[in-house]
Image 1 (cartoon, rainbow, N blue to C red):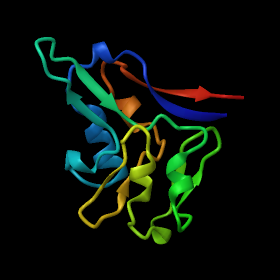
Image 2 (image 1 turned 120 degrees about the horizontal axis):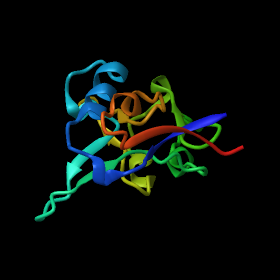
Image 3 (image 1 turned 180 degrees about the vertical axis):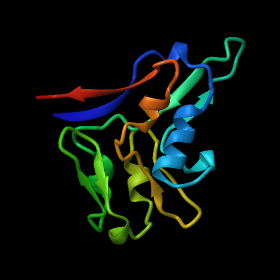
Image 4 (image 1 turned 90 degrees about the horizontal axis):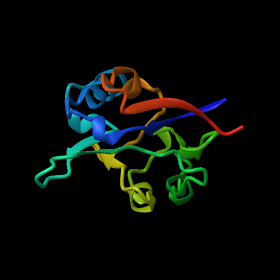
Length: 135
């Protein structure tokens, strides 16, 4: 069964960045929040609500469709599999992402959610969940 990351209850987010740190450290081997595929940001205003931006595992994966080298391929159940050795760093994937959740590291490689579930496991408020999707 395929799994995907979902934002269950964004109002519970306390902005602790545990999800971002888990992604950066465990997936991308960095202590920098900029290396995280998930973004937690204040939406500003008097309410100071937090917004969680993460790949939603599009079933049609427009980012993969836009990739000219085949570095991104659709993953069963939605989302993509990324192959660094095929990536030309053209940026087409980020331009095609309807949610604008793909950003780049200092070498110009995309930072894309790999669907490992670390962010959900480390979220103390259970804002982010790792759930089964589709048949």
